[in-house]
Length: 273
Ligand SMILES: NC(=O)c1ccc[n+]([C@@H]2O[C@H](COP(=O)([O-])OP(=O)(O)OC[C@H]3O[C@@H](n4cnc5c(N)ncnc54)[C@H](OP(=O)(O)O)[C@@H]3O)[C@@H](O)[C@H]2O)c1
Image (cartoon, rainbow, N blue to C red; front, top):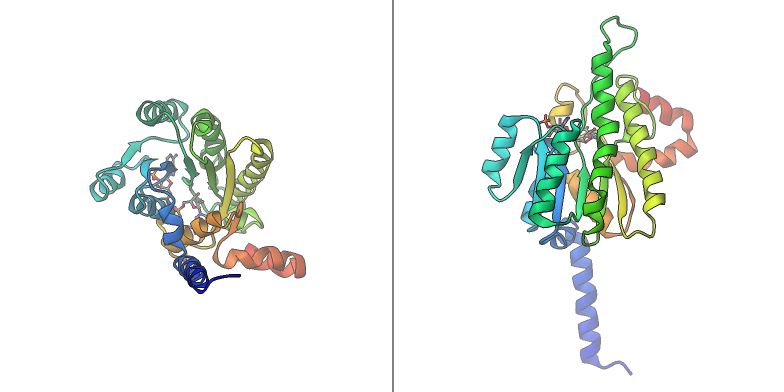
């Protein structure tokens, strides 16, 4: 028979679980203490929100970007972190960052492939140039794939290692205004899924987060309702805690349903978003 005192402790534990679930991000954040995390593009937007959250949670944070000013601001805000000037498209610079983390920590627990760019190219204009297109493909698709390969040995040494790919709702359906961007995100989504199959059973978890329209410098010149970067981080970490490997954030969560129920409408809405 269950004693009253046991029932009390059961109720308290259940209540604690409900409260933890309600607080969501805190629940997730607590688990990142002493974790070694690398976030690419942590000096702006969504990456910066990841940095803030992991620092708050007591993780050892490494990040990289190219902009000296925003990297400096980041270091000033978080003196304990390693903010490196590193172009993810440059193999030599990525190797230097990997060697630094290997020397400092000997392992990596979490890799957040967040850095990315978006250009609004119109192929009906003569102004579209090869260099802009190649740069977008290199930054958004080639670089995170190569970077992931380079960090796999360190992740194998990690504690509950996890690779997080930041793709986009445009990975599901393309937007008229960003054809190259949409293609890179769809490509990165395909890579992420295939990598998940390959690493299944190796102990390295592979997660993808697909944010909606987010209020960052990347979307500064685009009007519309935008989610905050912190809310994207909250939703992503909460879903990771719940064991999800694909995180459809904000309005993106309706998209897979809409694609099934009304594919024409879904295509139209995203194309013109
Ligand atoms: N904002 C949105 O609506 C939205 C929606 C869905 C998905 N996303 C994705 O979320 C990610 C972050 O975007 P965001 O909105 O936060 O944009 P953001 O504010 O412009 O930040 C992009 C970050 O990527 C870094 N970066 C770009 N190219 C790099 C390179 N070659 N090497 C190293 N770092 C590089 C930038 O740093 P430097 O400039 O210093 O290099 C910056 O820190 C991207 O992958 C984006 O596609 C954004």
